[in-house]
Image (cartoon, rainbow, N blue to C red; front, side, top):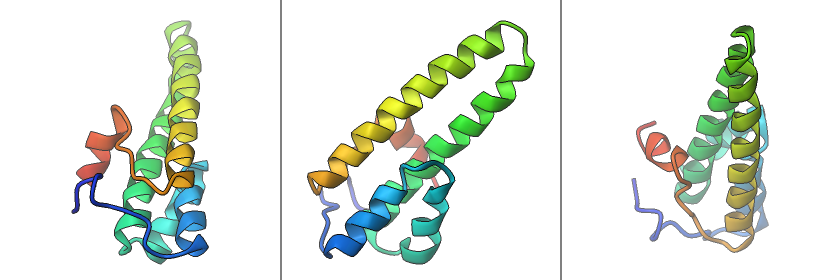
Amino acid sequence: MESPDTVRREAGVGSQVMAAMSYLGILALVPLVINGRDPYVGFHARQGLVLWIWEVLAVFSLAIPVIGRIFFQTSSLICFLLSVAGLISILLGKAWKLPIVGNLATKL
């Protein structure tokens, strides 16, 4: 896989829309399946998939009294902020490696 610095949006609006879908929860699966071979789209799709898995695990943590709720609320805020950062990077035509998520995404 190419480094985030060398991954750039080469195609037009289609790649940008597919990459943007990556940060919209379960919709991260759509660009991964349809256009995952494009390095730009694949990079964002893998990061979006990691965020979505984190969000699902956070929902399951609600079964744990007190600590689960705190973990869920904190995770929801962090995932939201990381998704916004990912969308901003797409608007700028960049591929920012998001903190925490970026390292996990490269292993997918």
